[in-house]
Length: 172
Image (cartoon, rainbow, N blue to C red):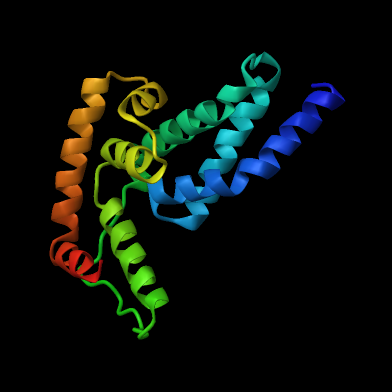
């Protein structure tokens, strides 16, 4: 790459790295893995930077690469998640911040228990704000698949949250 391309990539990276890292965290539930997955997505983008014609589609390319990396990694036997029977107690504070933290932790813990492809659909639809068509493009599947995976993912999330779901509803 020439110096101008490197500069453009560096500017894009600085502008988007935290958003990509947050999305990766929501997909995998671990900040260290999120860093690795975000790096994987940016490395893939860097390799293809000169071939990208539509710079407006960079976010979509990075998002798609990130989701594929999460799903691929979840299929590796050494990366299969292990769940514990008890969740550690979270110190309670009377403020709204404590409620937000507990709600966020419950949501992230619930998302970890949803299968990777369904988790990807839920994160892209409801946390990244993509519509059904946008998720279909990001995951390279049909809109019908997105709808069915959304339905199954929400059911799995409801089941994973269990009693926590009632607590979340009463808190809002």
